[in-house]
Image 1 (cartoon, rainbow, N blue to C red):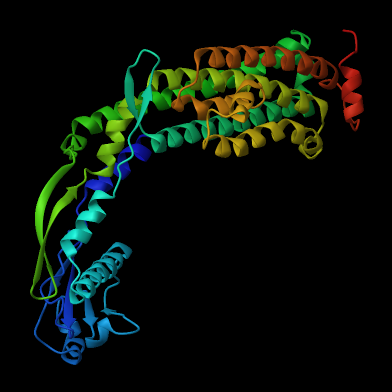
Image 2 (image 1 turned 90 degrees about the vertical axis):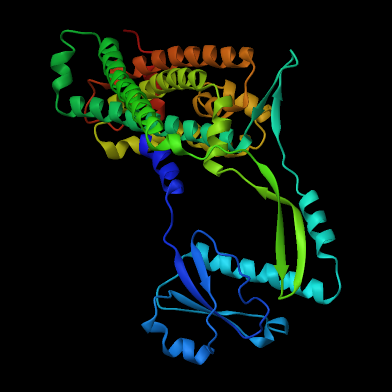
Length: 414
């Protein structure tokens, strides 16, 4: 978990290998003008393409970029010859940079004021900043993309955990039943106590694993923050004046050149607006009670059948709400305040996933409290129902159980 956060940041800080490019410009429009980047360096030897290709493997160049005389005519194209595969970023940079310069050349040849066009392009770019405005008048900067990532990530984890540990409970019950171990155990405890012991035991295993993830991930991240992450570039957006050349003899000034901060820096800065403590506490609550509610149903299924093949007919109604909530969450994340988002985050069978998706965007306290209360009620009701099925089915062997039979078990007297 720590590596998922740290490795992308560390990779973004590494300097890529610089690829040397030999440029043969037969158009004489771009010679010496294509700007270098941290991943590519351009040289402009005064030789023909034929000579460059013949001696290519005797040089340390990674590629040859050939710009033909007809580059301004129909079928505009440049060719790249390589002996060492260029990265996709290098290829894209070469194509977009030369294309942009070609665009400027064509405008300049038609006596178009490049400074006016560039100024219009820069001034028409909008930086959309979102802020949460409280009733008190206080506002706080937010990041919708970051909130979407946290919400979907939390929902996916809840989805995986409920399935993983719920099925573990079901298989444990089936194993005890098929091995006849349960007959010995039930001589000492009641069926409901045995079922709850199985459910709570697995819940504590999952909770322990989750808490260890938090502690170890936090510790590793703190160590990383105190070592190589402290050198992360935190510079703010700055405007600077820069002079460009178009062709061989046309100059213009770009007064609005923007130097953007590293995207990792932006995300880390925006992460400060997230209430991590509240999300973690909510995650633990929804994981525990979502798991307890579903695992009781899984335990009932395990007690009702003799082998795993027979579980399929009973598993579908249990898993449909989980799958539905995960599918709906991808729509709700586009509008977390919609009526659909409200109802799916209140209904106990879907609230563990959907509410975790909504939480980073901000949820009214009364909605969160109502969702938690109904989830607890849902846990109590499903556990009571599962207990009625469990006490009958755990000692029943060799009978093909149907939904009608399960309905009868609910009303058997103890």
